[in-house]
Every structure is written in structure tokens, then in C-alpha cells.
Image 1 (spheres, rainbow, N blue to C red):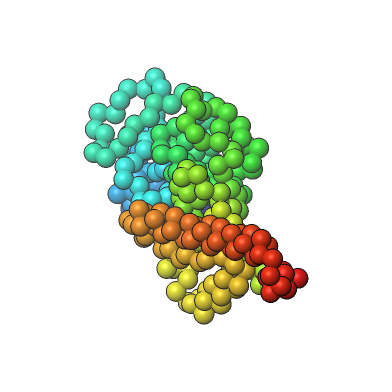
Image 2: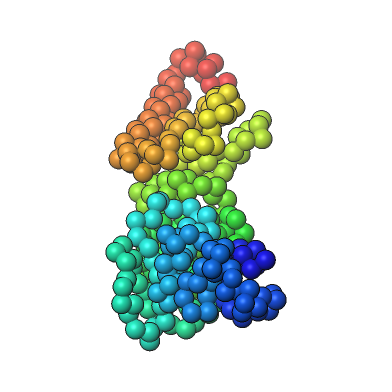
Length: 301
């Protein structure tokens, strides 16, 4: 029973929570002895594995924050390279901080809410907005908006609390974004000066284009796990996009992560090709209109 109570609370429970659920001191001692729960620190018990990032944080008197906390919630991100722990601003530094941990001394306002093992969603997002590259912060906030975890009004309020401008604005976010690599591509191309819109409908179909660049290039960001079984549907979608007069560029999440210069160059080439074709067409029309012969006038009727 005790393990079930702890599990229902995300794998952690305090003594007071367990007592409120009807657990006795004897029952709790028996559960620890049997190994169904473990005492992480004074007054806190867990059913999670000892190698779990949250267990390690709680054992030190800390909580998960930033990308580490968001990773637990399924947020879009690159693979976290370090763990982020939050601790009270006036607390002593833990004596045995593991390697690869970044410690953040937070004010009480940033530690209110959340759980025994993690800060609140807004505090974690705020930490990401302060410390991480803009593209990672945008992706995390896109995720929060797209999944409905935070309404736009609270995101606006969160951004207003940032200590300094860092290029992260509400205009950079898009609740329509449907994946992490899609968010990264959008942010990077906008930083290069391209006009990028998300989830544009394809005429005569019920499908949408992940990203449209400068009105002429459709970028489909494929995640293998989502598209491997949809080859035929995606090819039909490509045909429909081309019939609309756009080029199509399909990139994988791995290409976005490891081959971005190649992707960037491909975007430039395809957009320039469209611009060149449009310029050539305009020049041809002007030339035809300037010709006095009858055939030219017929062509323009």
C-alpha cells in the first residue's frame, strides 16, 4: 500500500503525505526493510531507482530544475548534457555534488510550488530561458504552448520576469509547432532573415506543411519514429506541394542536429532558385510586352 501511495505521487512522498494516506510508522519501516520504498533523505521516501536524477537531487536537499526537470515531463530538447539542480539561495553547498551537475541557488519565489523533487514548470522554463541558447528556450516554450501546459498569458508573464534581454520574445514562439526539430529549424532560419510560417495547409488536402520559407519552400521535418510507416502519404503530400508551385525539402532530426550547414545551404539554393525563376519570368513578360509584333500581343491576351 505504501509503495502504491508513493508511486501515485510521482515516485516520491513525504512522511506527512504517507501519514495522511493512512501509513503507520511500523508499516513504513517494514516497507523500507522489504525494499518496496527507500528513504532518500529525512522525511522523504521514493520508489524510484537510486540512479534516477531526481533521487540524487532530493538526497542532496535539492530539486530538479531547468532542462533536467523539463526532460522528466517529456519536453522537446536535445539530449541533456548536464543535470540542473535548484537549491535555496541561503542554503549551504552540498558536500558531495556529483560530477556533471549545475547547481542553481534560487530565491524562494522560484522554489514555491512544484513537487518534492522538482520546481514548478514555470520556474524550470524560466531557468531554461535564462541559461540555455535561445533556440533551446524557444523550443521548450513552444512545447509548453503546444501541449497546453501553459497558456500564452502566463508565458508572456514569465518572459517579463527575465533579468535581461536575450532575444527571446513572444513573437519568436509558435503554439502550432509540433516537434523539437521543427522548432529549431524555424528559429535558425528566422535568425538568418527568412520569413518562416508553421503548419500551412496544402490545398485540396487535409494535410499541412511543417514550415514554409519565404513563401516558396516547403520544409518537412521528419522524425523516423513518426514517418517510417507513412511513406506513401508523404510522397502524395510532396506532389500536392509542388503542384502549388513550391519546392519541397525533407530533413531529418539527425540532419538538423549534425548536418545543419548542409541544410542551411540547401534552403538558400532552393529559395534563390525560386527568386531567380520569378525574376526571369518577370523579365520575359516585360520583353514580350515591349515587342510590337502581333504574336507577342496574342500571347498576352
